[in-house]
Amino acid sequence: MTRKQLIEQIQTKKSYLCVGLDTDIKKIPAHLQSHPNAVFEFNKQIIDATQDLCIAYKLNTAFYEAMGVKGWQAMEDTVKYIPKNQFIIADAKRGDIGNTSTQYAKAFFETMDFDAITVAPYMGEDSVRPFLAFENKWAIVLGLTSNAGSKDFEQLKVVGHATNNSDVDPATNNSKEYLYESVLKKVSSWGTDENLMFVVGATKASDLLGIRKIIPEHFLLVPGVGFQGGSLAEVSKYGMNKDCGLLVNASRAIIYAGEKEDFANEARAIAKQYQTEMAGYLS
Image (cartoon, rainbow, N blue to C red):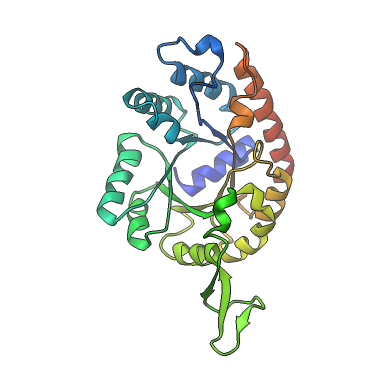
């Protein structure tokens, strides 16, 4: 999917909601547990109930990989079932030396036809560039994540290039910036806003102002709204750009909204709440 097509979907649906299909077979409604394709059947009903309210679906591949061959089949069947006007993300957090990343990219972009994959940038440029070589496909690179452990590395102060902030060493003209800021600056030079996005957690919404100074045009995938306590209002206030520039993900808050046979209706009701709020911020 191109950037233009993604923006058109946002404008048409008045939504920038991404529904996370992080489907745990132990958490789906009891009446589906004995279904021969329980995960896929659950996903189908969620998709049918929410597809007009969201513009993207994100599959955390760990929930499928944990099931072995059956899980991979459920993931592939789910991707094929999702309407083609939806932006489909493999939340796989891959990243390795070039030839390995190329194989990861082929697996998710060609074999399973995802539009995007999340990528860990720790190994540097040659681990990310292979994902940027596929036409109309996207790498979504980890920037500032919402987990508590983000302080261990992402929020360490490092010596970087001089910026406009006040934390500048006059002897070297270098500034101490956060590692995630260095990552955003460096990685953004490897691709464009047509094939590169960044993950920024919703629980870090106050940092979005600074992030937007570094990457004003790129789309951001924002997890952490809902069960993790992130504020959609704050994310929209600080993170939105002229094209919206946001994919706000909600997983458990939507897909596990109901536990009975009408679970899909319950999921739709929550998705509708998000979409209605988003429409207000877009207007």
